Length: 208
Image (cartoon, rainbow, N blue to C red):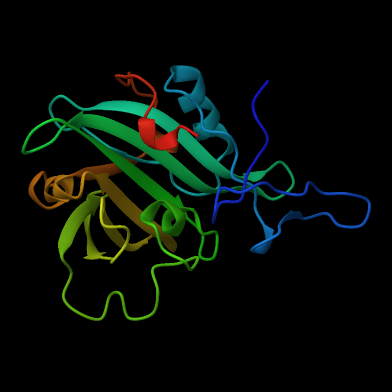
C-alpha cells in the first residue's frame, strides 16, 4: 500500500476530502491537488503515468550517455486527473560524482516544480523570463527557451513553458545544471511512446 498524498508545495500532510469539502487541504497552503507518493522506477510506473497524466510526461530521449530513469511522480487524483508529472533521472555529472535531474510538467499554480526548486511561491515568479533565455531545450522537435530561476543554492533550476504548461528542469548538484546547457537535451512526451526505458535505483531526490 502506498503512503498518503502530501502537499505539492511543501510536502506536508494533507486533510483528505470529507463530507464538508471535496478538496485536499494543506494547513499552510489551503486547497491543493495531492502530490501522490512517488513511483519507483519500473515499466509498470511508466505505463501508469502514460495512461493517467493530463499533462505531458517529458522524458529526455535519447538519454544522455550513462543516464538512467530513477522514478516518477504525479500531482492530482481520480476526480480531477493528473495535473503535474515528474520524471527523475540520475547519471554522471560533468565534473565528478553522480548527478540527479527532475523534469516536471505542470499546470500553472500546482506548485510542485517550485517546491523542488526551493521557492516559496507556486510558480517561477514574475519577471523570471524578462531577459534572454539561459538555455534552450528541444521539445517535440522544437526549441523551447529556459531561464535560470534563483532557487536553493545546492541545485540549478531552469523554468520555461511548453504546450501551455510550466516546464521545470532541476539539477543536483548546482554544477550539473551545465548539462542542461551543454547536452542539448531533446524531450519527448512519454504518453505518445512505448519505450524500452533503462531504469536505475530509486532517486534520492524523491525519498522522504
